[in-house]
Length: 387
Image (tube, rainbow, N blue to C red; front, side, top):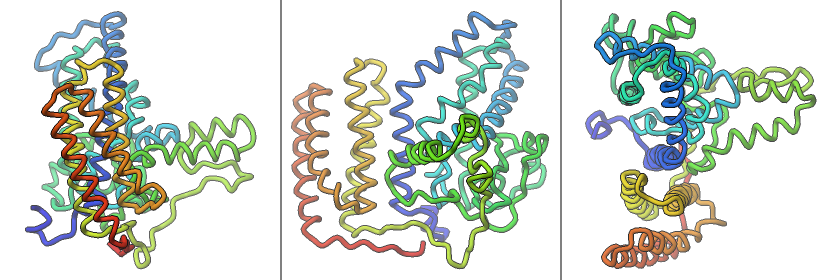
């Protein structure tokens, strides 16, 4: 709707589906990880807390500031430590900037960043209030992922993180890289020397685009590249520096630090494989169906046995990866879609154990397979165009 009224080309279907698919992957894997991270905070709070801080208006204010400060450092280190960057890079891979990008999150990020909040547990803040304020801090950051809001009044821009400040953070232009790490309050960047004003419009994305719509590869690509780099790097100390130093670090014998290069805006084009319209519509319908399955999984996961959770997770992640393959037109793997359709139907029927679900999923599988067959009969037309 925003795109329609503003007459601006803000969203692309393939990019938006991939962004949300990365969010789906993160939420599904998080169903396994969050149990341990929350348990760790509770354990520290209950056994090692220095104080027993009551829930009052002043403690809530202090906790909100503490959560935001911890977020700043966890976020900053996610940019400055190569290992941590592998979990966060997913959020920066989109070459667009819109609300769907806010949902694009890495599945490994929480493993590296949760521990930055442990000082709040040691201090003795209430775990329930911590979870609530952390959630509100995350919700706040959704609205700043937009190009439709310009700069706000100066007092707001001085104190709070705004769309203008966060556009800078998503820029791949050298002067914008590793700036404006704030969650809700931009004051941390001003205090710690990482603030950058928005000047010309940023070029979004990462310095080496991944050029794929596959959300699974989006999560793995950095670590695969890092493994290759470790094999090529001589010496144990240099290998440790590859892991713990900034992304782009190299020993002198391999060329030294690889600084980001300026973007040639005259020749730069976004990755934009455009499948045929019918295939795009097909993927959109399948994606909406998987969104429904994901919602069902997330709302009922606590009541599932481990094997059920695992089966649901594999089905969902495989499905969103397959949609990326279809958008990428990876011809070697496209026909795996037939297999996915019927495995998805069988898995859903088995896990939900209801006759009407079995009949509905079976009918949907047959219609989907027939539709995909008719689409594949036509010669696939794929264009790469400047977005």
